Image 1 (cartoon, each protein chain N blue to C red):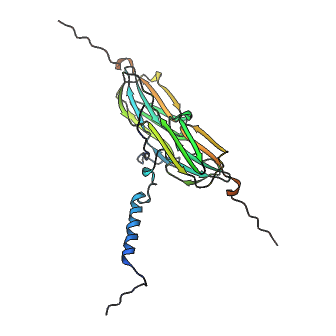
Image 2 (image 1 turned 120 degrees about the vertical axis):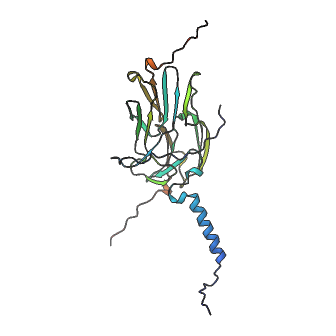
Image 3 (image 1 turned 180 degrees about the horizontal axis):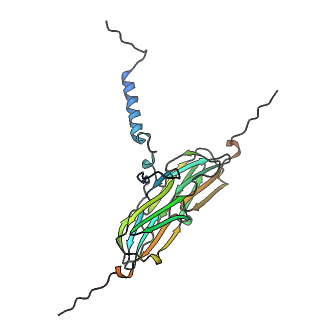
Amino acid sequence: MTEKELTPKVKEEVPAQAERVRPGRIFVPAVDIFETPEALVLVADMPGVGADKVNLDLKDNNLTISGEISPPLGEGETLVSREYYTGDYYREFHLGEMIDRNKIEASMNDGVLRLTLPKAEKAKPRKIEVKVG
Amino acid sequence: MPIIWREPNYDPFQELAQLQRRMERLFQTGFGLEPLSWRGVYPLVNISEDHDHVYVRAELPGVKPEELEITLKDNSLSLRGERKIPAEEKNVNFHRRERESGFFRRVLVLPAPVDPAKVEAACKDGILTLKLAKPEEVKPRRIKVKAK
């Protein structure tokens, strides 16, 4: 398949907004977004976030995804060397499409969130036939 | 006559060379704000320890444990694998593509010797954790102070 060698990326931090209650850093998760005729699908990398710690919010046309990580170190452990920072994830999207809120599906596997946002009936593409006259 | 204070064996060029090395290090470390990570090799790892174990952790979202090959020889640990992003159906249009797929291999030297027979590897929520046992001789020992 792919012969590409992966290179490490420094996680992008979310620009500071209002101060949070929970201390720590917040990162922008890397996402893939694609569209099928029926739905908009969003896939986000959020390593360290369990399925029960994901928060999704769709208000008007603003979709917010956030995730809280479980403690990066076990009890009694001390860090010897650090190459990456750990922290929660947060990202906001403005959706241009009409979404059918009742049919949104989300799953979390191995730190990857997959969100399927089905399009509302009226937003689905309709084939327009051109009449030969 | 001007008075020039001199140290014995003072070499101004050596001082310049030292300054240059320090400046280079400063640029490499990003002025101390961020670690050296962008010069590293995928996957980035954090190493921690407690009394009995050394822990090596790496963020590998979407990588299945069976796609990983971990080997340990003396105290050099090798991580190999491939991050696959399953292909979607044919008729999709991508708006954003930020996640990357590809293979990786990394060899890292552990800060302390470990017992090769006692290694545990686990993947949870896209984080690989390797738990390596320290051999008896490197464990810190409590020294009791005798009261006279």
